[in-house]
Image (cartoon, rainbow, N blue to C red; front, side, top):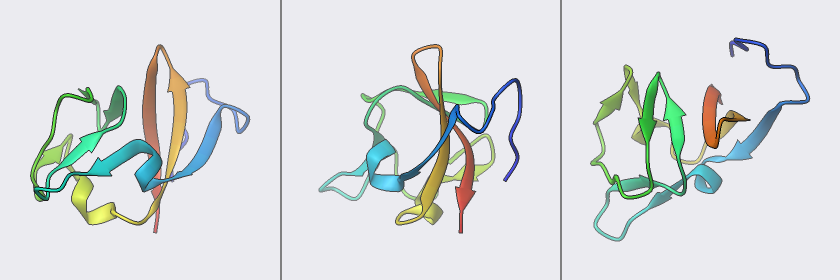
Length: 83
């Protein structure tokens, strides 16, 4: 895990994957709200297939994992992934 920018531990939260992303009935994944991951901003209207990468991150590989997130500028920024 890498904490960047001006974040402090109070700004960072550990959340379940399904609080940030939802698995759609057709097998795609969609963010529940505006999310930034790997330097790429995603919005809730964007659903994507497994294997698609954002900033080099294949989100589908982390279904079921906890995410390290920070609330910043009306976005949820994914800072890390707990394995």
